[in-house]
Length: 452
Image (cartoon, rainbow, N blue to C red):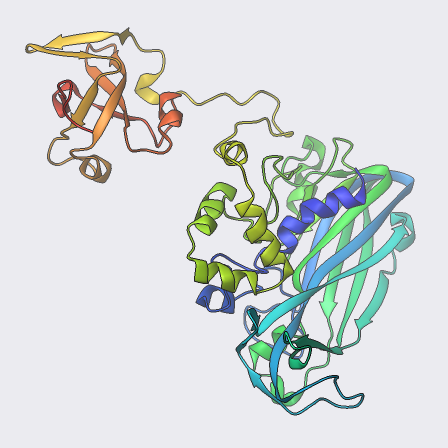
């Protein structure tokens, strides 16, 4: 699998938390970002904020096996809004004009917001042969210099009315890689990244200042030639003990790409082997632990004012909003539940049997105490007192009979779906959460013309 394809999978993790629903800076949720994969400066010694991420993986390969490591992370960059005291034709060549920093500003319909953006960073190491790094680890120091950029914002008259000031701080780190031979053709690789960014004494108690010098959403991509990585989730029997002894701090490695096992992703979010981007997904939602359909519907339900604020966040948020509004009915339908094989499973996934609805004698109709009931009939739910919370919640709901079951003890169970359930089609197909069972004395047939 090509590295670019693996990066696309990793980006689902990379940008988790970059901007969270409801995608507005005014939301408290978006004031607590960068929540995964943080590697903080060692000088910032606070409980729970690690300064090192380390992963151990198993590799099968002979003397010619060679692997590459790509550590990737986001560097936080502040974006400030400055309103010029006096609009100007051009910015001064030295220094900055007289301005007032404000949290937000509207310039002829363009909303400017103070925000934190991110810079993608990647450090590559390799190719390395395990046999060459047994005794002494390979160490690669790296650094990125700080920068300050001032973007002028012009009003309709052509004068500069405001500026956007983007600031990033210098960061420094060290990557180390070492190999241990476990058998003739089996190696344990230890790969780590440390944040050694200097941290001023005055800032050492301020987590916000440390975050600006941290590595956010840190993860690693490993690829190998003339060898294959070993799954730590499902290792071969002869490597089960070795896999259990692998130490992973802040990240966990899973196989990615094809079945040749030539690549791994060490992610701060634990994934299954061979994760993939769902083909139905229309694009990044920056909230990878959520469900595309739910977030899409929530975006569409936002007010116009909330959408304007979302569009003002940055280009990524604006593209997300535009893409969501452009979805067709067919696009939305594709988001509504899919069953598929997972590469690690050997058999086709089938819809699960629904308890009493599985392989039990079925009836088309039922006559009881003078009442006629049949599949397709509308009923009102009258659950008995003392039932569970779901029964209580469904009291007086209108439903449709999907099946009438007689179990092997001659008890009758009526399977129904709710008229007002948006997922009723799933219930009709036998899926849980949309299909409910009641006894015949807990339902009340509705005469034709009654009910909704």
